[in-house]
Image (tube, rainbow, N blue to C red):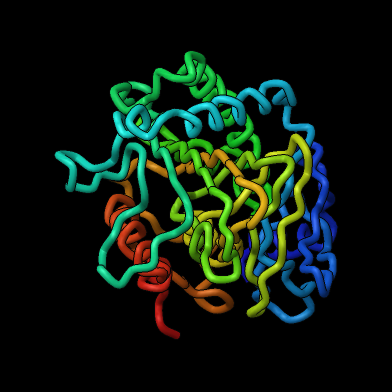
Length: 342
């Protein structure tokens, strides 16, 4: 077996939740609690490649505390998010993601892409903005109200970048790679998008989803959620489990890019958002992806021709992300299209 893969399996038996002061979270429904996995730094889903390895932890998102962002600033992020969605509709539509009233574009305010008249829309408004590279920001789509929105978003982008770099370094170590392996991939052309979600109250939550089941097309995702209203759920073995609310925490989620680069050792969990009949909910999501002109494929160190052959085909990142938006709208997963047959 590849030496790095061997070290990976040894580490997954003993790694403690040390990164960023993380506390491992368990997901539960009202009827049953998910058994706690062996604790890991980021609680990724780990796939076994040899007999005798611990069973893989569930595909969860970890609540990271001790991340260095002050609770007061996280509250400010939520405040400007709510402030934007409290604006009159005509004010929000100044930042519409429909060019000329009908041509969909990814950035801006509105709903997600519609690809079919039969498509069921999510019960969610969103504001989607490119925040990195800074030179490519389209400030015509950045709200001027609330007055502090732009400054708060810029500062939040800087702070989350620091956290993401630390997380990526720890993930590389977990996989037996050089600590800077993933961090170095995020060059000046790597992209970060911020998505501000607003989920209104829904009187029939059993019939409508806030956000359909999906995995993230990013390499890694950082989520700041409402401290008072839950709604995020993670799929495990056909059962949906609630992600508990952890005050002042950031949720760290593996994306498809990390699953592919780790050759399937780290899993990109399928998740969704359910609606609430009594309370509205907001969240802010940061999606980190590599330079769109680069190619996405398993790291050579993660491939062992005998024990763990290549699991995913090579694909240009911009093509992968384009496919992601299309499949997301249809409720399917683009990562399934690049999985190699046995």
